[in-house]
Length: 200
Image (cartoon, rainbow, N blue to C red; front, top):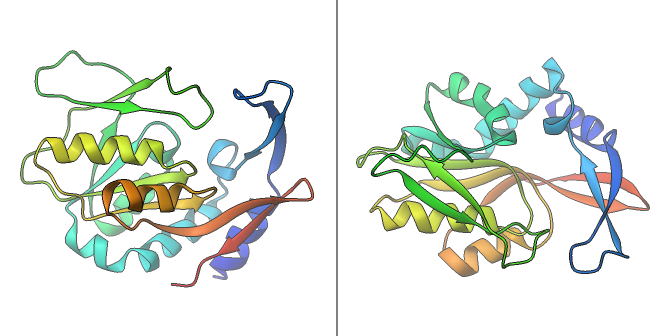
């Protein structure tokens, strides 16, 4: 299977919508409707499992579970099945359970005064989670998760995303010391999505 070609082609066939910026409502930014938000072909699912297994060889050996934030990262679940790992979910729902991990999430497209909360109830003290998301853009979601997880005495075996965009990877390293990995960098060039696969 030519997994690189499949990922590049299906990513670059994604549509784009223009959304107003919260900083300046008169200015719009291009939002790419990626396969994780529209339709995942069987070939794309197979391709991303191959890519993630190659990208995360070391981390997948060290971890005992995949930590997946709601909602699009849930679509990475086939990787858990392919690597015989358990899944721990991070949800937007507050279960009001004593001991749940509460995560403060600052979104890149919202004023910093407005925060979304995330919640995790599935982690045990001896877990070695690998945090995986569909996209790292500002890095704020990952930074919030890392801080909350480490405040409970847990350490991540790694951080990864399928796509990266913006300065998120740099921001995560500056804020937490972790060096995240990604399969590909997403850019918008001449109003079209472009997928640049990383070497690994």
